[in-house]
Figure (cartoon, rainbow over the protein chains, first blue to last red):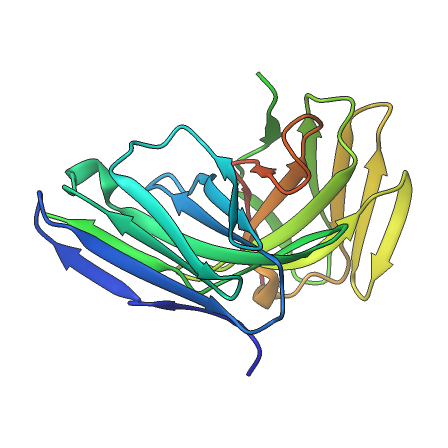
Length: 113
Length: 113
């Protein structure tokens, strides 16, 4: 199936730990994104990469670090997790090159205890 | 601050009726507009994109854009219980970069059988 996939689907961890979320798309898109959806369901952009180059870096604590090893993968590493980081994190991709429609992965529900 | 606004609802309509969802945006220069549907516990799913003033129809869905009045709406004809979800309006705001979507907080739609 062509899609945007994320692992893991659920992540439960303690404060202070470091964790990573992985995203892969096989749609042949050039641009990938990380979004955070908080408990009030508000969806907000965190980062975007276009062809492995960081193009959007919103005001996000520097404990969050995205990495794009190639244009099909975008990972999110979070250091020193805090309670407020609990949320659902969505990866998305778009074709780029003048096409802006974004397609979302299934999400990773992060719970920090 | 540039933003996208939606009535949070819930909007309740009887089965078979027309559901009308509205969205206003603050940036007059915005050019690209999207509607996403999000079922509870699932990821946002793109259902419509619209770039020009007027109506765009796709099956039971019609998106309407009025750039002069800075609003975009989504009509769902013959509403079905399966349409019950939160509908997110998203806009690429001018000056935000071609790839950055700004989402409204969503309108929760409930279709009553």
